[in-house]
Image 1 (tube, one colour):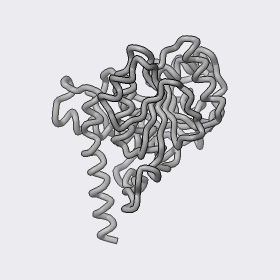
Image 2 (cartoon, helix red, strand yellow):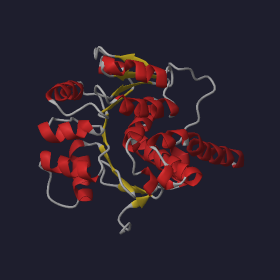
Image 3 (tube, one colour):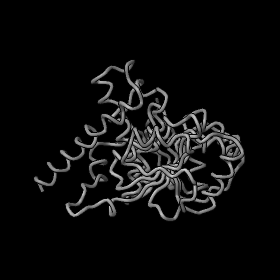
Length: 284
């Protein structure tokens, strides 16, 4: 692995980004996030993304999903609002995550195009990436894309990006769209609009399981709702996701892990940042 040209993400850097919740915080000040996830029969995608979103600190969450998914989501996460009318206006939310399990048909494509035309920055994942590759939608700027290698290859082909390695194409897309591209893998790379590329030294093979990407989408959407910048969200979200995965692997073993175990170990990932920040503040 040639990491000489990449910038390594560090614990001290993440501590610098991480913000402790202010004592006077209430749900209205911690951001209202919107997740568009889960076609009929894919409620699990929505549940995974929704729980990790709220566990990452979002004050409120609305999940847009078909009526068939309502009971599953409300039983799994009663704290979330479920909207099956798809009438929510994008500009009413501080962050939007879209893609997990929404399908790749014409109806899903029309819905994604409507959200892209709103001009709101979004976390784009899974089926949303496939739809963008398929239809070549104009994506404006300021988004966070979260492709794994196969999705990045499809994006490169669908958007006719210049030839090169997947990393080179991710960097090109980041610059062209003025967005952040999280190229998921080990290590995961964060390609920034200014040309910088960061890599996350954490994470493990136990995270190579269905739904892990949905959890990342939820974490990113939850952080962005709280007022972090796009770059802070991309870096901190990737770090928390990988760190929670490492804690899960340590406790459970890589073979045993499920995507939900990453969410369940987020408290340990946040606690590491909290304790380190507290230590630095006491020394100041």
